[in-house]
Image 1 (cartoon, rainbow, N blue to C red):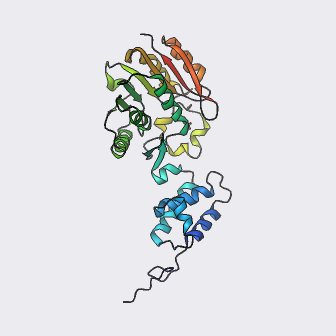
Image 2: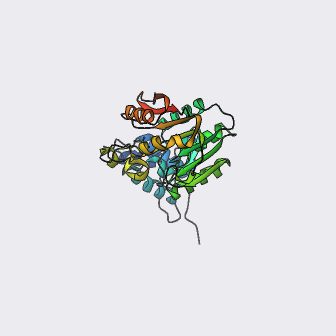
Image 3: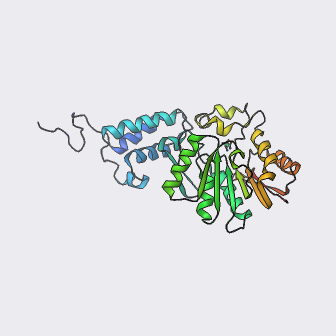
Length: 294
Ligand code: GLN
């Protein structure tokens, strides 16, 4: 049988759209959708074709096969429905590491790099023993372990599914020094003490309308909701941290931009000293740190 497929037709004789035509069709669907821009459309097509954006642009007239075409339109529809871009491509860069993300974990935020920065600055011990509580995709623990190969890192999450994603990330990046534990905050750590505790706990208020907005509503609520005032997990962390820090040990916590004074208070109430907050990329207080005097 004669194959009717040519450069611009599939094997049923249907014309195959070019990359450029698909991009234009994608952009036409964006009308009135502010959450998704032309860059997203281009990045999605590049992702589907396994190309970089630059490679995609090199040959705009290249035909796109039916499988890639359908996959592109399906992903675009999900993006237009508000799903985070990272869930569509399955990864997000954090601290220059490629982090696999699934809907079982929060998408790592650029602001959280501040927590990594502060932790590196605060803890000068070469072979420090540290713990990341509520690790999710493992992004923070992996960034710290990658920067400090001698640190003994433990990472905890209450979600077994999240820990599986974190372990996959560790395998892919080739980081072996992290002990992964499923459990609630300090529970799986028994009486262990650390030189550094880091956490980006859930801190969004239960009644925050942002939870229903595009993006957040696709992310695990367990990783976002922090109770009526968003501070329930923070209270547990600040109360129990002294039992898990060595004298001179430090804690660094990410929190909501309007929560720094309450987090400072919780830390002071627990006996911490040198309590300080640091601003994020939008110049809002986002990370608070403190020292346990012992
Ligand atoms: N920073 C996240 C947001 O977009 C919240 C993350 C968290 O609760 N830890 O609101």
